[in-house]
Image (tube, rainbow, N blue to C red; front, side):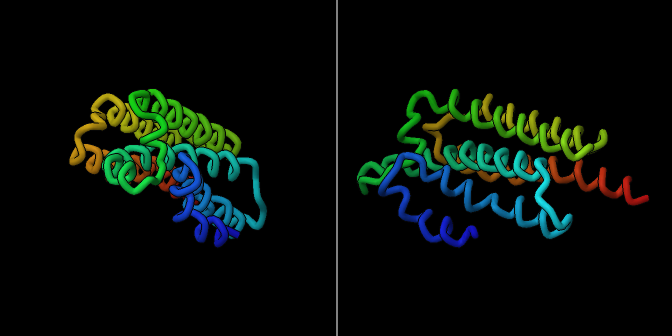
Length: 169
């Protein structure tokens, strides 16, 4: 269960530069739980969705972690923001790329139709905009971009929801 991940996540900043990985593992567990609750099984598409969610979480939470860099250094705790440093853009681009690839694999494995793909395309454009505008030294902007990920997720969800509604007709 995800309970163990939820319990250990807050301590990971003291142990590893990768606490965002543990956040992703815990936060995206719902992809597996939700899929199995609805379908009664765990299809490979659910695992692709889970891995994509983890990669996306690492990306956007690294943006958030850049707001806390100085405090983290003073407190002696770790984060991907500190680990990636000046190469943050490259790392986030990589994680966002993995996320989009895994989401695409999930859609393909699930036999999704055009609306789902359009939602993923819109999300991908949004993530690209984040990367283009990201300035990790601008704390207010980091917060805005972190929060903007709810819009990225909403775009993807909207495509999937429209797809499901059209399939139900």
